[in-house]
Image (cartoon, rainbow, N blue to C red; front, side):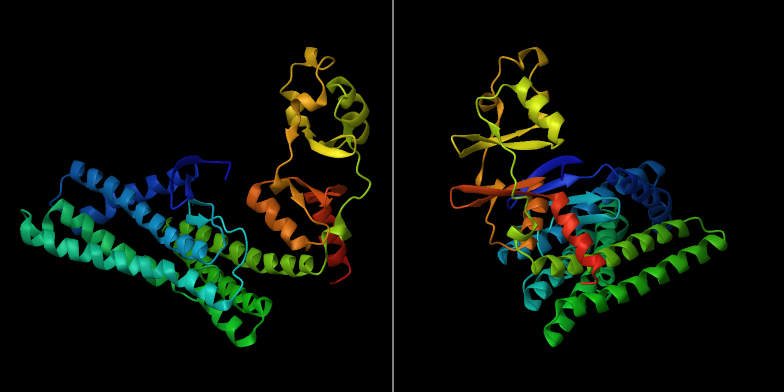
Length: 376
């Protein structure tokens, strides 16, 4: 989650705000301040509508965050290691590094979100009832109005997410059900994805119909439908990729002819004899046969050019960490998880203490292309 504004961490999960979030925040606030609250409470002043509209919009996204956090906490309890949540124009998304390993885990993670939304619905409904009893103006008090809106929107959020259309929570529940019956995640994902795409087409059609009848807000439904269609399609493709990679091992895809730079080489020589000659973005650094670190172009650029001739590679290389090393006997699907989870471009393949190869994202893409071309 490099792009966006990092807000805070909760339960070890980093919360990030995508820049596109500001678009939907403005649209929701504007709709509440100029549409919903003036219609529901015509006696509120314009200033009051904008204040409670802004406040309600912020609280709405706070409840969306709680919805996503419930997914993430349950996922982490089941060992899926959710590192972050990003709020963006279409709501929120958790950074899932791998698929659930069983149908029961899939179900537990999926259902946690709607349950959270329904709990929030009852909390805000109770607050609205209590405030209406003790606040001046009763149910027509602005604070009561905000609680009533949040109760309504969380019920709506819970119900919509239970629609059995992947990748909505209901679609994941459907996938878990089919998975438990067929014991085949690929089949379950295929069915859930198809239902999701049909639902997305329906949303797109409804949006176009509204636009044709003069309602420009229908464009929003078109965009949502297109996003859901893409998400349903890519969800199935991810399972196909996982299946393709699960049949191969690191030793089958790695580059075994590793070109390494001697630790005592100067940066000037490293650039001329390695980067410009072999056109790789990084190289292992060895000293007497032992791997000491990695030297990448980005690290070289940090050193002033006039110091290249006097600076040795060992002085500016990046040290090898456990996360950068993988065994030749691991499955290639684990490489993909490692790349995605830690935002890496390459991994060193070590057999014990011996460097036997290097594997990059490009190597994985080449393997996938060959397998797809062969119809596997």
